[in-house]
Length: 183
Image 1 (spheres, rainbow, N blue to C red):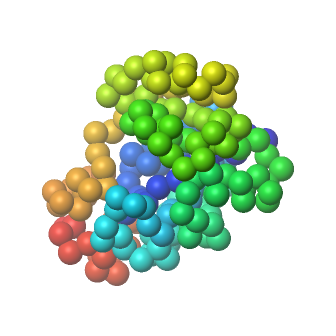
Image 2: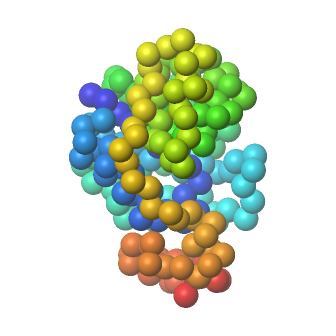
């Protein structure tokens, strides 16, 4: 089985995240997707508690979307993929955006990640091929025909937008008073 691994802060999870997951499933890039919310990133601040972010992700859990609750504290992607490869007998597919391929060689132990299939979701017309050719591997799968929603969790928090949130996520946010600026 092909298991996609989608890592992020999901602060909060929005329709763009779920649209991407469903696209990969519906178009047979992967058979299932494991979504892993991270406790933190080097460049992220003011993250809502990890358990609350996991709860919001669980809204989308089904037989093809798995929400990880045990690897959220791993600091680096290679650590996560290493642990998952020990626990799953599936072929792992790391899912990243085109913006991540630009500095992929700066990731900790990126060479180890090259052993996995890596799905690169094109965005902003980035010339992905010019970046991946230096890695001399056929493990990259470039998705050019996906139409991103122009939204981010940051925009949702800053711009009081909720039309990009599933109503169940919005209800959870309001009930738990998570993001004061979301109306």
